[in-house]
Length: 138
Length: 138
Length: 138
Length: 138
Image (tube, rainbow over all chains, first blue to last red; front, top):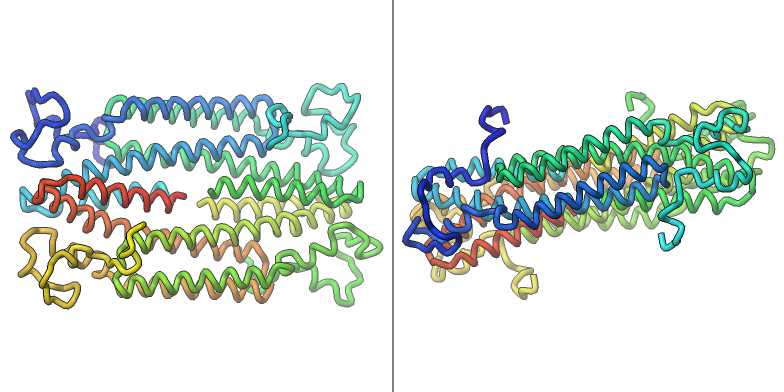
């Protein structure tokens, strides 16, 4: 936010540093980056990308269904029930992303901080995650 | 709920009681409206139907945008921020429907109850509305 | 809100008019209690006042328990779980008040509006209720 | 959860592993802290304990105030407004605890995992944190 690069930043910025990494997915092992969590980190939610995309496509369909209900002038309580279902589905998606973020980005930053000796990296990631969770709680 | 007719019940169930009413849906006009609230009641959210449909179409687009972000493996915090925006937009839609429902269905039921001498009508509507609000609060 | 009388206004403002009231106000109607909802209206949540007070006293105790957990430096996840329990308990209290408000104040206003011929009364109450619900949804 | 020690587990479970550590609780100091985050970790929210306790005591007072409003039969909308204020205050407390938990327990587990070679430690902590956040979102 406020960062012009925001719109293009992606989930695993460290990928860019890995250059010609030929490692075949998870289980790259300690030899590569010397740490336990590294292998998870580069995947994060992208491991579940298909499941996530399927969920979001279902939510999109639910929203379209709600519009159809409005168009057909269905009973408002029934429409509200459908909106609650979308809320619940979005919450599940959010939680999945929060879990991935903490488990990969924050944990990755913790490792980097330990290696680099600069704890600010973690503090920033943690504050960023907390702010995002706060927006979800509203 | 539990009522097989649920899926087809529409916003203004009283229309069904109006028997031989040949009027094509909302906008029956003042002639039929013997009371202050009646004319509003048959419209309810349908007065703002276009605005509501526009909002829902925007929300649908937002959800599609989130799927695109996932597909492009954008940074998870940015995705969470977009989900919060969808949550907020859905809350606005919900609140609008709640306001319409209370202002039309509940108020209409209050009038009917007074005319018919059966307060159960109101009690039912109020409980139904409260249950829907409870689902929104989760 | 913005009304200096807010801090002292009570649940059933019409009570104050009852005394030796010659009812110049919103058409209480000839027989005074001759309407269906009137008797409930003057009570509203006060019928369940004891139950409500008991709930709130339990919530107060829960909050005190959370402070004790913090003081004893209990595990933060366990504290968060207790906070979730308080949230849920407060939501139940809120919903009960919303139900009472709609079932009594809004429905009462609907009746008054019909008698007085001034629908603004209802519109105001409905907007006020919706705004309060919106604050609960945040 | 499911752990019989739950009721007495405290914020910094690692203390228990420290064996013969004679240090009286938090504030063990840097001598023991071989890493960047360790010293924070043993404190976590206890650093802000006073502020947190003050907040919770204010919330307790707010809940008591709501009970008083009910007892005096104040207007239900005004009571709902106060409940929303308590909700908001509790959310702030929750978020503070979430931030502390991620920044200390999760980050600490990440370090331990790296040292011990057992990534399960992190996975467990992350899932536990996510579950707690999910309960806050409801």
